[in-house]
Length: 249
Image (cartoon, rainbow, N blue to C red; front, side, top):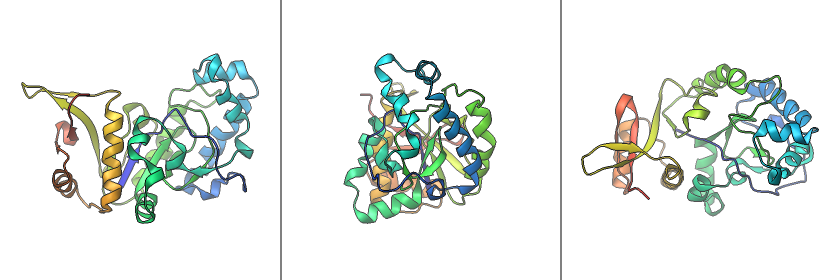
């Protein structure tokens, strides 16, 4: 089973500075060409702080993000699951994973980065700033990533649980054998409404529970049965999706 997560805008600083970032240590080596093209363009863009600010859609108070991009080649690295912060990753709490949980996460969790494409939970990466809607000169991200990312994900066998936002799904379709999970709340009339911001915490907590359980589910039916025994309400939704039903925060 593969759990496919979106990234976060925010990243944790620091990491191992004993070795420079290495493309060959990333999962899906077939994406090396696409990765290097975006990497070089982002570093070049960072030489123009004002232009980079506009391209990244950040405020003047976030210019430190441009400096991060400018120094990517010499920045310290940490495993991807520890690099990302924010609501989803706080709910997952990678820092508290046991060695066995880390082993499962490294073989089962992917994060879909706008800079690198899909990467493994244990892939060492620097802090950076690039979003699905960033305007990288000469590289329209959707067009650049869609076909190679779709092919890379399709090459991975087994159940794929897609927890990405629609925006990141536009950077590469999940495999035909994937199932999309959405977080919903249910009204008294039984009508379900998808949550926006608050869905991230639930996705993080659900992913953490999957990692802790360490079960390599082969089908959506197996996943649903486990989830409901583990205290989650996971049910079939529209269009073959799975609904994680939660109380509205």
